[in-house]
Length: 146
Image 1 (cartoon, rainbow, N blue to C red):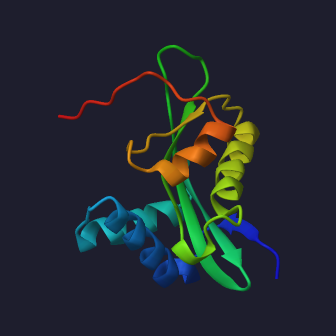
Image 2: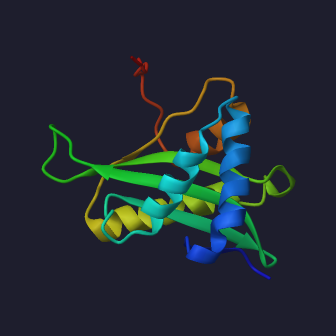
């Protein structure tokens, strides 16, 4: 079966959770159960038009996900899109899953009239950065957190 990128649906909860948990573990992070439940519910709630999630299916199984959030920007009239989480199962990396998920966000951004899509990654994520360097432009910004 070919690769399919599609919006998240209610019946994806177990696989979405598995994929997002693996993503969080890659970054040595965890979230409480309430965050899992709330995030999944928001992804499906049509009232939350500021976010979306796409699932990558390969050979009939969920193998990747991407979360994106739209928000206003003081330097633009239109919103910008923050690609927050991107993950593909290790056994399917190198098969275009990440690229297809990013391109799905690009298409959704275009559909919404959003010219800017941005994301962050950690400097040690060298495999992913090889893809990112081919499909986007790295910026000189450094992130700070409170």
